[in-house]
Length: 340
Image 1 (cartoon, rainbow, N blue to C red):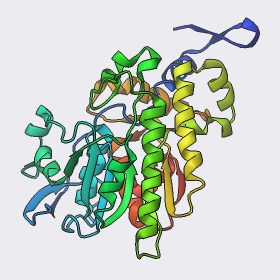
Image 2: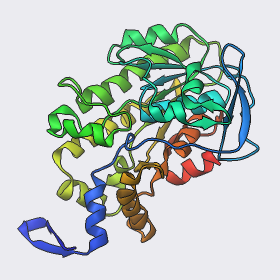
Image 3: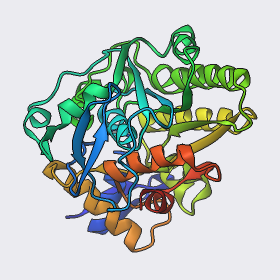
């Protein structure tokens, strides 16, 4: 396959197959690409009401997943009904946290896969019953403040995002690239969905952190994107300025504005995850772009990060809450270490 890219001065340059594929799929960045997959190795966990649930884990037989849910405090997961948020919520319960999820749709309807899949005799839908789902809009700061004022929170995880907003002209395709199948409305812009919700959450979390009688800073986890780091990667500025479409540039502007605000927070321990493609081996449609990213990273393209599984990312995001030394930007190799 041959593809022509317009370079500086209108000059056409022939590119080889793998590089063309990489450039094409570099625009498919997301924190919400495809759905997660099941895991193995039995363990026992508890619901918030104390009843026992049997579940599984693929990471390590030594993982401390026998803790009752809520033993380690509560986590507020913003966007907890979405593709990444649901996986984060499930992981947090397994790790011993109680979970409050805030999203506009509240509790998501169980998928047929969740109803049928068994983890040691327990369906994923049954496991997610331990989540306290709240219906509300994170664009309203008072909504987030009210939840945090209930007390007992050990951290906040921001999983809200979308790949194609309404102004991109590609909003109707978001249902295909979003694990939750969401379709943005006219008010769902990158500025509103990413920047505004995160700014509100940061302000509310800072106020809550200041009100606690705790010497440790409240952890705040934000889901950014690997491509937010393009300006610091060789060739990254060229790719963004010359090849990236307008919607992708706006997507990255919103991510970077949140990262910039987090860098000024003195009352929070801020952790910024920059995943590239988030994939699942049970989604065949995700394999072509995932393969392209793997190849680009393997051959050393500095602006292409290796993809990560949704389970590894979720595990890393939850585990960093209880690791006081984890702070700042986390890339794919950091995700690997945290998820071990």
